[in-house]
Structure formats: structure tokens, C-alpha cells
Length: 224
Length: 224
DNA sequence: GGAATCCAATACGTATACATTATTGCATGA
DNA sequence: TCATGCAATAATGTATACGTATTGGATTCC
Picture 1: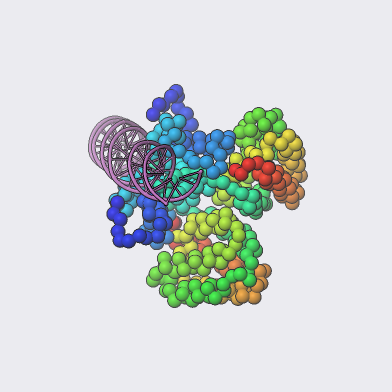
Picture 2: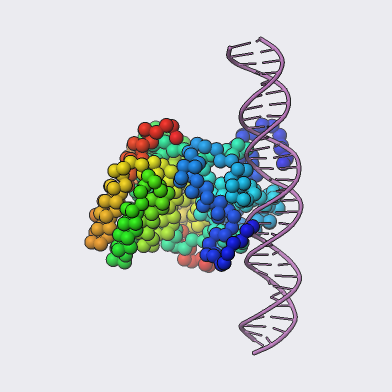
């Protein structure tokens, strides 16, 4: 196990951790498509690991709902139809609303959110989709971090990752990213004005419109 | 790998699967207490397996929130304080309400629910708590099975298991099990009368009272 | 006596190796 | 031509083995 350079952040220098991050990334980026089989041996080779840590990462991802496992046959990337996605968005609406309600808006650094949104606005979504996605996630979860409900936040995070690939589908719509930017501005404004109800409304509408886009796009694409 | 007797149900004859079920059971029964360390070697020996499938099962349970993992140190049973438990019950309320709302009550076999509740009533909770718990779970999930929202149901199921040990804490209160029986009867009645709103009210109050009991009991017990 | 240090024992993380189960391709027959 | 059966192949599931990090305790020093 090559250990390079100086002392680095002690977070996750275990093989399983790297593997987890890598596979998540591969799904996000479309390198592994829904329904596709995940070959343990290939992955192990790519990551310079044996199949043991790879399998542990795959087990984890299966428990998270990102992969599906069939004994003696292996793992495949989870495939969601529009009903599945609606369920995910339903759960997100319910849980995120609770998160938002639990936040003390006077404590929120709205300028930081503004900053993140600006940076996101600079990224061309169709050119560097994974950068864009990451920035978009940062925006929402930076806000959620102010909530004193860590378990709810974790679950929202899980739902977010679960549908990550599908969310990335609409990034190629030119209008979409502009709308996202505007939606975020409305959210920031609500935060600034301490208006919880408006914040929830804005978040709901933002989420609904992305849901619409995803499901629209899903219908137009080949059976994923 | 000893393969006994005739063809059995093809469900999960893999070692990891057995291991998963076993560890879940050990937590439910209190054989593994919250905060306690989970020794991979011991478990492997008990289950006649190597540490490989055991570790996969542990990874899965960590992803489910039942265990906590610290690199190079191992797995411990997750410990929840009353705030954590409140979060779990909050999520259950939100998600279970959606499940109930999505059910076509005219399709529900209320007699079967009645049957399950009767059987549960026969089980002495303080003598065979795991039997009682299983039956109790059956009652609720048999109802949830009528919902067309499988992902939501899965998540509710996860939350159910996550707090399984803590839920078992109140089973030793003599009055509690009687109250559970009565609550279930009210739920069945609402199903029979196709009264969704009353069903939701009854479920909410049932859940709230178990939450109260759990948290009460948590306060009285040694720091678990 | 208490704190810091060093060492051995223990347990963890992962590589290698093997047994078992799917799967693929091809040959055979209807 | 298409279906069927079988053999070779590949991939999965798990046992064994090994290097390494952590931990508990004895020893030393203050």
C-alpha cells in the first residue's frame, strides 16, 4: 500500500473507503449505467486492490440502494423507473421540509450560500457535469448542515446519492441550469429574510421542477 | 459448507445472508448491546464462517445505521440517545403516513390483521420478547404491504430495524403490551370502516405512545 | 505515586488461493 | 432453423495467510 508524502487528513485511508468513493463517482459520471453489471475483478484491478475490499464496498452500496445484489450472480447498478423516482422525490420532500423547519435561519451564513451558487453558475453543466453536480449538492447540504437533525440529514443524503445519476440527466437541458440558479437565489433570499414558509415553498418548487425534468428526460431516453 | 436435508427455499443460502440475519437477531435480543464492540473473529467462529463474509455483513449493517465503523478499530453497535430516537420516530411518522394514505383500504384483509394481532396477544412479551417483536412487526408490515410505494416501505423497514433494540426496551412494562393490543384493534377497526384519517390518527397515537415509553425507559436505564 | 514510554499480544485490513455456481459457446438432434 | 444439452470458461463466494495498526500492560523515569 503506497503511502505518499506527508501526513494527510486521517479520513478514510482504507481501501474500502477509496473504493466506495470511486464506484459512487463511476455511477454519477455514467461510466456505470443503471442495470449494468459490476464486475468485481475488473474493479479490483482498476483500483489496485483485491476483490475483498471491493466486495465490502459493493455490499455497502447495495444496502444504500445504489446497487442490487443477486447471490452467485453479482451486483448491478440499480435501475429506477419514474414511479421509483417519484418515491424518492416524495421522501425528499417530506424529510427536507423537516430539515428546513428545524433550522434557525438567523444562524445561517447566507453569503456563503450565495458564494456557492455563484461558483456553480460559472460551471458549464454539460461540459463538467460532475463538477456541477458536486457544487449543486454543496449548496443544499451546506444549508442542511444547520439543522440539528443528523439522522434525517443522513437519510436525505442517501436519497440524494441514490438518484444521483438520474438527476444528472437533466443537466444537458440548456434552460435547466439557469432555472436552478434562479431557484437557488430565491432560496437564499428567503433565508436572508428569515422567512421559513417561503423557504419551504421555494425548495418545494425547486425540487418539483427538477423532478419534472428528470422524469421527462427519462421518458425520452432509451430504457435505462 | 454443510448442506443439510432436502431442497429448501432458495432465499439466501449464502453465508453473508445467514450472518446478516444472525447479527440482527443478536442485537434485537440484547446479546449485542449498543456501544458494544463486535468482534469479527468471534462472530466468524460462532457462525462457522471465515471473517470475509462476516465483514461483508458488518459493512451492510453499517450502511443501514445499525453499526458504526471506525477504520482499523472495527465495528460497534450503534448507540442512540433520546434525540436520535426522536428523529427516527419523526421519520417513521412522515413516511408511514404516506404509506397509509397510499393504501386502498377496500383491498385490505382486515381479518388477517385481526388474526395476527390475536396471535401477538397470546405471546407473553417479557418471556419471549423476540417472538413478540416479530409478531408486532408482522402486523404493521402486513398492512404496509398493500402500499404501492416499495421504496418508502423499505426505508420504514430500515428505520424499524435501526431502533429494534430500543423498541424492545418497553416490552417489559406490563401495561405496554395491553395498550399495543388495544391500539392495533383501533387500527383494524379503521381499516374495516375505510376511514383513512382515523387510521392515520390511530397509527400516530400508537407510535407516539411507544416513543414515549421507549424514551422514558431509556432515561431510567443505565447509559446504553 | 503518577505519568510517560516501550513492547507484546490482539485484532484489523487485504492479498492470495480454492471450491462452487453461472454462463457462454458449440455441437447435436428434432 | 431453432431448440436442447453439454462442456469449457468465467465469475462468484469463502477459507487461509500475512502485514500492519491498535491496545493493554509492564517498565522506567520524574
